Length: 85
Image 1 (cartoon, rainbow, N blue to C red):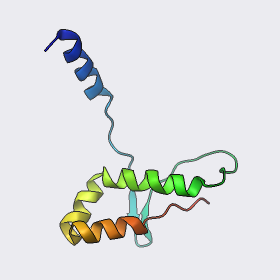
Image 2: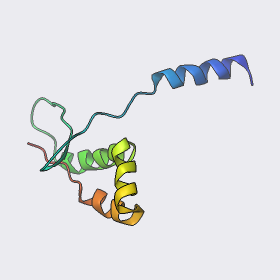
Image 3: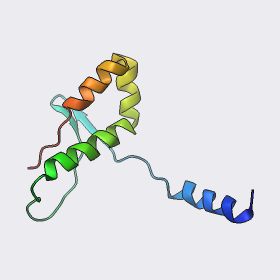
């Protein structure tokens, strides 16, 4: 492997960041972020897709699969919808 490729891979590994923190309580799983102004039409669907991706790439997903199984975890994930307030 070339030196340039190795350095690039090392920089990429340093840039990787942990998934955004999730807060879980009796009413569900939450993450918060602030966006100034009114959201554009269709923003809730886009946020929902991103939210579901982040859940799937987080430690919570492994817990869901361990507790409920793959199919049930997928079904539960599809029920996770973002609400724009």
